[in-house]
Length: 124
Image (cartoon, rainbow, N blue to C red; front, side, top):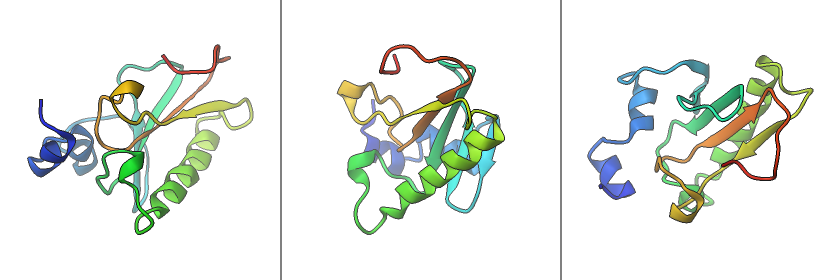
C-alpha cells in the first residue's frame, strides 16, 4: 500500500481523481476551493463527503498557511445542509484522522450525515 504522500505524488489519490473528473461521483456541491459528493457507502440517508480541492492528507497536514481550508469546509457544510434539507432537523459532521480513527482515504475530508435520528455519539 502506498503511503499518503507517495499516493499523492503518484497521482493515485482517489479524491483528487474525483475532483479532476476522471472518476465518477454524484456531485452535490462545488466552488473554487471545495468539492462535495455523495458517499458510495452511505451510513445515513444523507452522507456527503466534503473535500478541499487542495490535497492535504488529514487535519495534521493543515498549517497556519492553509488553515482557510477549515473555513471553506464549514462554509460548504452550511450551504449543503440547507440545500439537502437537513439544516433544520440536525446533522453530524465527522473528520477521521489517522489509522486509529479508521481514516481510509488520505485526502482530508469531512463527512456530513443526516436525514435520520442519529444514535450513539460516533460514526461506525
